[in-house]
Amino acid sequence: MPFGWNGKLLRVNLDHKSTREENIDEEILKRWLGGRGLGVALLAREVPPSPHPPGRENKLIFSAGPVTGTIAPGSGRFSLTARSPLTGTISDCNAGGIWGIMLKRCGFDAVIIEGCCSKPSYLVLAEGTCSLMDAGDIWGMDIPSVCSALKKRHGEGSSIAAIGPAGENGVLLASVGTSDGRALGRGGLGSVMGGKNIKAVVLNGRRKINIADRQKYDYFLYEANKWIKANPITSQGLPEFGTPVLVNLFNEMGVLPTCNFQRSYFDTAYKISGEAIAERATVKKTGCPGCPVRCTRVTRGRSGQGHGPEYETVWSMGPQCGIDDLDTIIEANQLCNKLGMDTISTGVTIGCAMELAGEGCLEDAPRFGDRDGLLEMIKKMACREGVGNLLADGSRRLALSLGRPELAMQVKGLEIPAYDPRGLQGMGLAFATSNRGACHLRAYMVGIEVLGIPKRVDRFSTGGKAGLTIFNQNVNAAVDSLSFCRFISLAVSEEYYARLLSAVTGERFQTQDLHLAGERIWNLERIYNLRCGFTKADDCLPPRLTGEPVCEGPSKGHTVKLDEMLAEYYRFRGWDEKGVPTSRKTAQLGLEEFLC
Image (cartoon, rainbow, N blue to C red; front, top):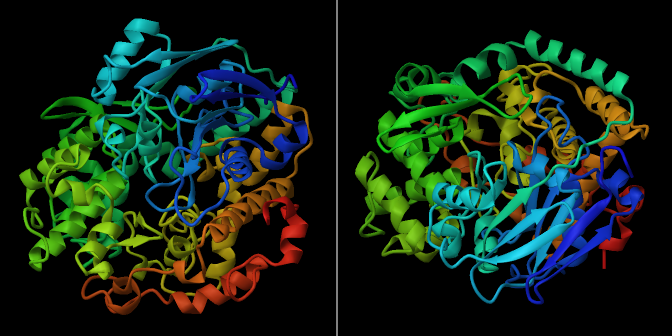
C-alpha cells in the first residue's frame, strides 16, 4: 500500500518485551480511515467491554491518519486511544505538531502498546527497529525535562511523547505531552501510560509519505490555502490572538462560565483576554508544520516561557476559579504542562473544590479568587498530596465523596469545557451525548450557534439542534480520523477532505463516504460504551444547567432544555427510545461483529 497509508501497525507487548509488525487490511483502512477511527476499531476488537475500566488489560493505541505527514494545512495530527480511567468510556485524544508525522515516517499507521513493564521504561522506535529502554534515571522528571534528556540521548531530531509525575502517580486527569509542546489531555490517558510503567515513546523516522496524484493534491492545497486566507477567523482572529480571542466574545454573549458555572459572565474578562495576552505576554507566534493559521502562542510567565495558554485553559484557571490575574493563569498552564495534567479537568475540579470549600464541605482547599491556592493545589494533585489526592480523581468522585454530586460540572465523568450551555442549546445537547463525556470538539456547535459557520442559528432555540449536532459529530469523527485540525474545518468543507484524501491515497472517496465513516465511528463508540454499562441515563447534564436559570447577563433566565432535544436526537440517529442503535442501523453500518 504505497500511498497515504503505510498499511502496517506495530504491536509492543510489554509483558514479553516483544514487538511484532502486522499488516492492516486495506478494507479496514478504508472503513475506519485512520487516527481516531482506526484507534477506536482496534480498541473495540482488543479490549473487551466491562463494567469497570481495565487495568493492565487496557491498551494504548497511537494512530495517524492517511494524510498525516503530507504538507496539507492542519494535517499533522495523530490520536491516542484507550479506555479512560476517569470516565470508563472509550476515549481518544489527538494532538498536532511533529510526533504524528514522525510515526508515519517510521513506517506505521498505528502502534499498539499492551501489557505492563516490570520497571520504569521507555520505547524507542525507528523504521524497522523498536527498543525498550530503562527509564529509571528519568522517572520522576517533568515533561520538558524528560524530553530534553531523551533528545540529548537519541538525537535532537527525535520526537517524544512523555508523561510527567501526574501520570506516574496515577492521577486520573493525567495527560501525555510531546517534545514540541502539544498535549493529549482529556480522559486521563497519561495515567494509563504510567500504569504500564512507560515514561515516554521516542520516534526517529525518515520514510517519505507518497502521494498518488501529485497534480490534484497540489491543486487542492492551493484551493485550501485560498479559503483559509479568505476566512476572517483562520486568517485574522486565530493568527493574531490565538484561541483566547474567544474570551471577550463569549463573555459578552453571557456564556463564559464563572465560579463553577454559578454565573455565566465574568466582570473582568478583558484582563485575561486574547488581546491582553498579545499585549502583555506573547513572545512569538508559532504553529504546526506547514499550517498557515499559526494559532499557537509562546508566552512569558514568572517561570519562563511556554506554549499557551489556550482559550480553554484561560477559562479553567481563570473565570472558573474566580481569578483574573493573567500571570497566575500562565503559571498554572505551565505547571499543568510540566506535571502532565489536563488543564480543563484540573481547573474545573479545582473550581468544584472551591465551591465545596465555600460551603464548608471541604477543608484545606482554596476559595474562589485564591491565586496562590490554585497553584499550590495543582502541585498537590500531581503528587497526590493531602487534599490533592481527592481532587486527583476528578470532580465527579470528589463531589460524590462529600455528598454533593450536583456540584461536579461533568458529563460521564469528564469535566465540562468553557461554554455555558444554558446560552447555547446545541452545545448542551452535544455535551450530553458525547461518547467520551463532556467535550466541545465532538460537535463544536459553537461554530453554528456563535461563529456562523456555515450559518448562524438561534442559540436559544432547540429546534433543529438534534440534526445539526449529529451532522457535526459525524463530520468531526471523520476529520479526526484523517487526521486534520478542526480549525481548518472553519474555512474548508468536507468536500475538500474527500477530494484531498482521494488525491493522496489514489482511492476514490466522495463526501458521503466521509459522512458514513464518521457515523460508523460514532455508533461504534456508542455500542462499546453501552456494553460497558452506560445507558440513556448517562446522556445528561448537571442539574445546575438544566434546573437553575442564568441569573444575570445576556443569557439571563435560560436553562438547557435537554429533554426537548434528546428524543429527537435518538430518533434521527436511528436508535431506539433508550438510546441503543437498532439492528437496522448496525447492519447498515456493518457493525454486527461488535455486538457480541
